[in-house]
Image: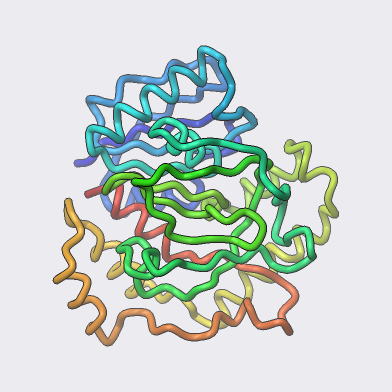
Length: 287
């Protein structure tokens, strides 16, 4: 049974969709809520580490952030599977020698400053990476950040955006960072609208309508059948990712085919994040 450490920088940013995925795979986890005063535990007793977002900056010279960066660095250098979301991604980059800088544009909500959907596109490395192999590109993801990252030379860029280029990264072999929020459940989304100062400046009704339409369209087009989701999760369960296994997955007739994402059709007035990375992240952290 895999034991995972989940670190929350603020209570409203938590496992969300990942919780069900981890339960299905028999994982157990401990939660450290740093915002509530919990210390960042030693990562040595754990098999994987997840760090979520929050209002802090990875550049803060506070005892909390200094300790957080040290723990993340130790885990990544030890080869522990790591998933960082938003601030968790930025902290990973900072801890391993990259930089956190002001974003060229604040990305907030489903749409970018031009009013278009917040879509990110996989790079050549991203298309080959086990976390994203077989998924449609580009895909739309909810954003809520004012800072971005500059990668060190040994980091891989897996997905890029229009305004903030570095959207998904891999550091070393098993540490991933995702700038956007794929983990949101309806309950979490409602909490964020109530509590987040940046989201309060936007049209709440429009955000809720887009969230609802996004979910309805995903179900209508049957984009993510359960059998496919289980296969995606199982495909990444190995301790290391083998190119030979990747070739076998590409030949699997049940593997998701590349096709235009219906939610990226300009006739659709909404956005959607790809649900399959949630399953893959669960399998990655379980490996």
